[in-house]
Length: 195
Image (cartoon, rainbow, N blue to C red; front, side):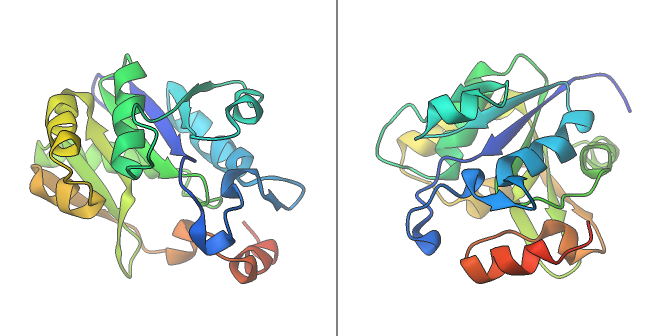
């Protein structure tokens, strides 16, 4: 890969409405919190990790990485978490992943980075083989002012903002690697995964 370092941001700042408000990143899967599974997958792929959390910050700090919260306290959504991480990042790129995706590919950052550089764009989104994954993305930190402008204008839809940038898509062929856990049933199914 070419120059430019990567900070991974693990998004754990949502309200978890589909999980009755439980903090998904702290739910147990196979004996450890979901966020730890994501850390284990992402740490070898990034130069630094930031966890974006709007509650339970002290618990997230125990994982040994910087924790950031949205600048505004009214849950503006994932773009606000990405912006907060981008503000703290000292690297060229931000690898965005949700806290509820415990089986991410080991070559995620490499694949996204290669495609981004090949296409000479500033955003590369993952496609799992069945659908686009707009919250699994590599983006240039140079987009920070554009992101701040969108948030200030209340343009908060992640996919809309990402696709409005000069972007490309990296196609993966294993949707199970991108499984995200949004219910107790999905958590139970994840317990049976071999990854």
